[in-house]
Amino acid sequence: HILAIDQGTTSSRAIVFRSDISIAAQAQQEFQQHFPASGWVEHEPEDIWTSTLATCREAMSKAGVQASDIAAIGITNQRETTVVWNRATGQPIHNAIVWQDRRAEPLCAQLREAGHADTIQRKTGLLIDAYFSGTKLRWLLDNVPGAREQAERGELAFGTIDSWLMWQLTGGRKHVTDVSNASRTMLFNVHSNQWDAELLAALRIPAALMPAVQPSASHFVDTDAALLGRSLPVGVVAGDQQSALFGQACFREGMAKNTYGTGCFMLMHTGASFQTSHNGLLTTSAAQTSPQTEFATEGSVFVGGAVVQWLRDGLHAIKASGEVQALAESVPDSGGVMMVPAFTGLGAPYWNADARGTITGLTRGTTVAHIARAALESIAYQSAALLQAMSRDAGAAGGKPVAELR
Image (tube, rainbow, N blue to C red; front, side, top):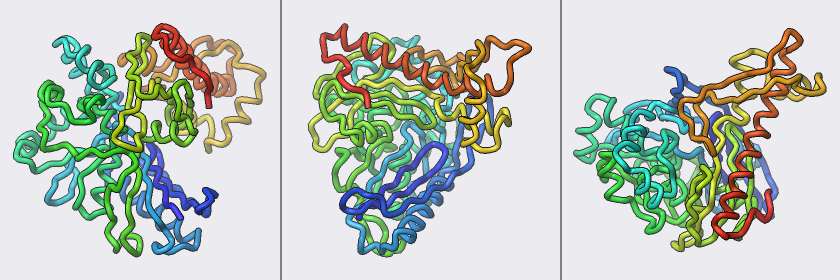
């Protein structure tokens, strides 16, 4: 069997797969979201770890398997979410800053004004934005008392969620990540697959904080035997969107996927070709099964399924997420209502950090059902904008157009 860990933005999930890739059992656990200020989103790192471990144990129990039945563990994770912890104690110095969080935008503006945009895009494939881990890490060093001094003494470790989980799985023995997660930091040179000294200096990040980087398919760590019943190897790690590109079997240039979770993410494989977008998309490292570089073009929508969560928890229009379809289908259309769910700014292809959510077209005849329908339609409209941008890029670059969307 294979034990797959899917550590997401709103929940942790574990799945036990049989050798024929059928699912033996799965378990899922939601955890709390923290919104300490407008545009800020945080998680408690301990919640991420305990929910991950609990779902692994529950899925194995449901499947009726022991650790001796598990050949290996695979990890996929919410990307860009940033954790810094003390190497000696394993204690985080602050809550995890989630990928949706916008607090680092003033620093991003400074980096743009200082003329770093072209260098960052050329080396990392990314645009300067608070979405990525590098500026979140810099915020922690600048705002947590004593953090910078500790970092410069080599006492702290930075990681995206995969690194945090592997640190915990090994009892603090291994500090490691994969290329797909590293490529989302704004600090990683995707051409050389190494942390970039010039970018670390530009963001004032001590190199001692950074994890070792390996291909996505490689022997990362062996877990502590006490956690799951025996020591198990972690044999693959990939950020959730590159993992989904691989999972949809998009291995060739021109093959694309769109997936719908908290956000919506469209990626197109571009093979060994690094293509710079002129239409608001990103270039990112694809999940790599060898040291050979592979790339993808990506468009990121920050709020997809999260708009349903907002209808439930913010607007109280529904009691459970599953009720949204019936509510939206109770009206024939949105009645002219349009919704832009820019709760944490707009991602691709607009990259407007200051945008906030809007609902327009309200009349006396508007009901909560119209708003719910407009909310669901906003997921489709945002995805369509990504596909149009991707098609324009492919045409302009003389590369392969989007051959297939999965």
